[in-house]
Length: 427
Image 1 (cartoon, rainbow, N blue to C red):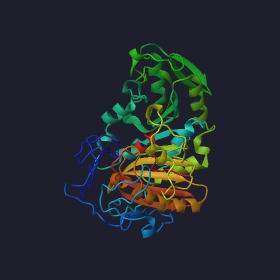
Image 2: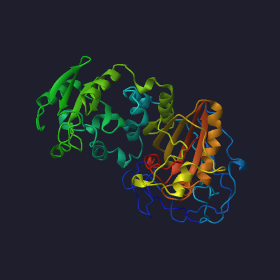
Image 3: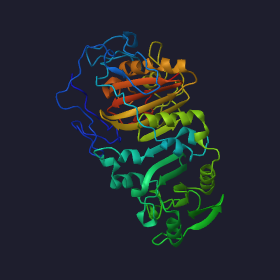
Image 4: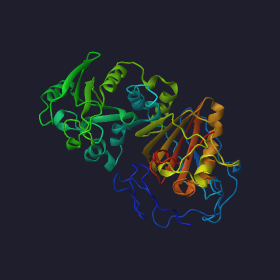
């Protein structure tokens, strides 16, 4: 059976043609060369799931046959709605065993995120500096590509002293419309202050305010939309919101409402950040150690439930109900509290980084073989294909209360989370 064609780039999430071998956006290899084949009829897990070799990680013996319930000789074999059936296993490759030198960039970004119920459900971070360190340089690390991707939310105007070439890391957190933004870079605070006061080329001059001893600039009322000013200088977003802007010790802070800017300034001065939460901080540290250049951290986990809706709020079909609340015998992870996802590139190519934070080490150890079993036995809700058709390799390990994994996949790093596809379903 030939390896299924990729649908999305695992490195950047770009949609791909059926015959694509490289992503047109980030230039990562997304598919084996023509003619590569998996071996139908082989035991789903044996020889195909690998252990991540980090310093200090207690590695698990996951190659035991007990991790799977059978074999699938015919790739078209069907399971009952929402049920599990053995799938052709994840493809083999050399395990990645080299630890990554930690940078603490994600933890530093987390220290800029105000701790609110909304930010706990969505924190997205980018380590542009790490992405730019790859050789050869991926297209997604080019200034042109980054400016196009980030300009919708982040200030990237070189005319005002915060061009994308100066950007090192960035974060966004919270739920629309109350989202917080921060960018860490090699910014000249005095230059930016002078340019914003003059605001040459801006639709109108900003209001200038003070909070916590810091100056911030404001354009328009809270959450004010003006589509005529979409992406206008200096920092209007795609919806025409001018928002509020400040530079504090080399960090560019942005929010679309005044109280949000005050929150960001307070947090930048050490008040009430998500980095003070042990679980969030641990997730940030482990994603960094996995070598990820993006990080999504959330307490809005994929918990087993019978309270589900279909698309556009319609009643769910039987498959949707059983995927979110599967019958006995379908592998489900132990309950975790915080999940972290990221995208990275190493010598073997792009991968999805997964971090799950548990209460106890025993729960993390139990989760590792169950993740492998879910990949091999369970179908994706969105594609209705086995996850093993989309994930070529699983590398998994445990450090204390944390389960970590690398997935070599033909889906975008955050697709299954954003689309409500519960690969990481837990009790």
